[in-house]
Length: 279
Ligand code: PAF
Image (tube, rainbow, N blue to C red; front, side):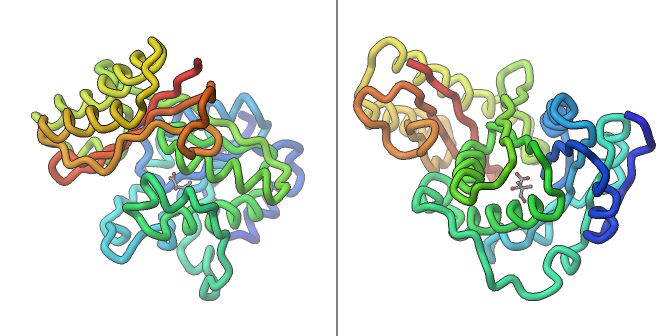
């Protein structure tokens, strides 16, 4: 990296800064960064001469009963973590991203109302809309998203394909603790006993993946059994679902690229995870 990392708050300045960059690789985030995010930034470095990380807590993707106002804002600590990894941090305030009321939206496909979308109405519309805006502002050649938010990644891929955006989307593997728990900003809210139990979600997903690889095709039963097991261990389950990797719809007979996804609450903390299965 040639220069000091720059922190830019305005769209105008960002566009000036990036005007002469031949290749921009972009990592959109909402801040409160952990090792998982930093991994995405390291991957971005392999794909562009200039690495841009956005830090923006997007009001459009939070429901009225969700934690937009409580979402941790840790810009200074985030920028320290990004030193030496990113070239530019784009950290706009809400009025910079939404100078007028946003009345135009990217309407995602019906699958956005299933899985996490069933529990967070409007969430993926808010995500797709802000990511489209960020893509238009940053104009990257490459953007990196974590596979942990699998549904988000699938919807962004569909958006890029269907709107002919000239951007390569890279899905990065989920970073995990030694016991398999997917890294997430939410893990910090787990009590000690919950933190130990949290690793079970990944073990359970691995078990389902193994069963599918060994020939089990009664997906509904696998999903039901897994949900019952989680409930019996004290989780409040939103879903366990086996889907096709690209469409996120129920797999067609013979479909070879599958993903098992789960979302459940331990105490007050909602965790999500998934595992890809290739047959
Ligand atoms: O994954 C996230 O942090 C957010 O949904 C994103 C992609 C930055 C859009 O606000």
